[in-house]
Amino acid sequence: MTRTYVVTGSASGIGKVTAEKLRADGHTVIGVDLKGADVNADLTTAEGRAELVARAEELSGGVVDGVLAIAGLVIPAPVTVAVNHFGAVATLEGLRPLLAKSDAPRAAVVASLAALEEVDQQLFELIESGDEAGALAYADSLGATANATGSSVLYTTSKLSIARWVRRNAPSAEWAKAGIALNAVAPGVILTPMTAAALETEEGRAAMDAGAPAPYGGPAADPIQVSNLLAWLTSEDNGYVTGQIIFIDGGAESIRRPELV
Image 1 (cartoon, rainbow, N blue to C red):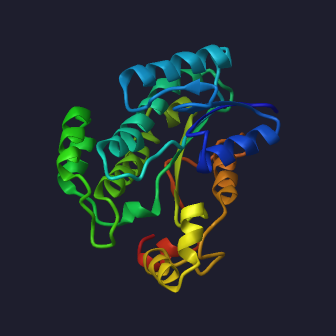
Image 2: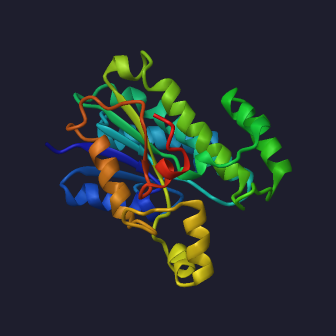
């Protein structure tokens, strides 16, 4: 059966590959990005988030079957927090009324294996409290602060916070009890021009293996692997999976914390 999806971050990366896959499978996709999409919206602003919801309602006819909040940034600047957490939450909450009108509503978010790395606790608490202005101001003061592995704490913290948001909200009356599945995927190293270049050197391969060892299918995954998982999670076939953070990382998470069940 043909379904209608809203995919943020549809102009590049995992978002683009996912939108292309869903369209190839015969579904209707409303792509969202800063430019070059069905809906051009800046998810760092209240106006952009409102535009996303209004245009998605218009283009979908008022019913959306699947929402994929894929838009994300890695740069060491407050916009990373704004998009990765607050933009994703605004997308999901804003489109939830349209999902509620579907016979088989599903939603998914892209988190990251990096959520397991060191985060900034004060920033995490500000995000968790819902204080976007405070979180962004504090993020600005952190600037390019990196953790012990060299990752931006703005990135790791925002990816942990959105994963926790999914876990906390998925079983709620607004989501699970309304029949809406809500999950997240947490990719490890994904093949991009940047990672491909790094993998060409011995130093680059060693660095990636240290941070995200991937004995199964590694050292990096094609983006279509993530898209395939997202497509299933947001399909009618997923009738019982919700509230999960599914690591798609070639085994890295199980190596890093094998005791966690």
